[in-house]
Length: 538
Image 1 (cartoon, one colour):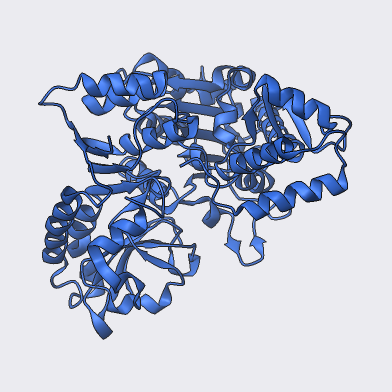
Image 2: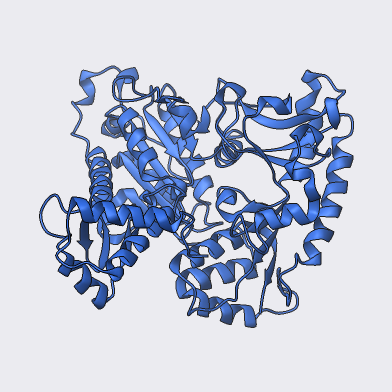
């Protein structure tokens, strides 16, 4: 699962172009293999690769580290593309600079409605802010208070550590003191944005929430929000930061007003983004975190008890595959994790049995949703949409044994290649691209209702005011649509479910396990709220 999805000819062509542009002092197949490794790293969201002593000697002998025009740069014992590394450094510096806003003028020079968040603390003795609730632990209380002093807050933590509840308390505190503050909520995907909005909305009404692409008004020609037309915000919260790539972060920073504060939230152990440049992972490195001072907070205490799931996640995060294997061996019969060792690469029978039962449930809940009025739709569709996200079947890749294609072909047959209007009722589907005109974002989950000419797609869509509505859409209106009986692990980032089924079609072997594979498996198992079924080969 570590091989690049780009064809070998692409890497060879890139290497040849580099050789022509900057002839190396020493060339050979080993240098070309290093180019391939760097390209593969980019595909996995990483800007660097670790260097063995042999490879370090190789790259130094090439001359590709010398001078400002050199294509490669060393960062400790890691090698990366100079252009990408410089862009990442620029993003870090821009965030550090934003975190160190200049001291504001004295508060008495401004009316209360003119005060920015960084000025509110100057007059707290006259109008004290409420203390954070005593139900929060020490790290959470520090995070809630961090925005008093810091303009950029980095809030990290694993699943169930209370990141979202901390954000809610932070926002409630700010809104109570300064109700006119322009605040917004964002995430890289529609699913993640919707989860954030659902968590915040019961406590704080009226906060707009959407994908970053929606905030930036993405279109065919790029983003309509930029330095000349910035976002009208004083505070922006971004969840699931591990999914944010370098290019999107650059676009966001360009569109932010100079005084807009940021609260960045995420789990540093999850997968890097699909695009190149894992911004969150860079921000979580100790040398960078130190530069944000009290604005960098890591939550450790777990509140959402996930039993053996939490134990396995901690073992994998802290000790790698070997520790994970040891934890698997110590599971008792009553654990909420079940291991299925499959001797065949055929689709495990458990997946087929699960889909049949789940599909029957969805069909029953979908009855009558074509006939009800638009006004009734949101209420009547609520049980169906809730059931749609109760279970997740996850695959590490799109092709091959136990892949996304394998699952859909085995369970749905040739129907997956047909017109979506011929897909059966009750089939989970996923939107494959951003369509802001419909209120849809890449990764939004929906479901087919009805069949044939009466077939419609039921989706929760974002409204212009930052809320959520339920719509019935004709399949022809979606430019990219796929079945979603299963999802790739990358696609599932930002999602959670009560029951999660993970297909892992390779042995759990530390000798063959990369850091990327560890993050992939960690991301998969931490999607489970209640139970986890892990299918592996011997």
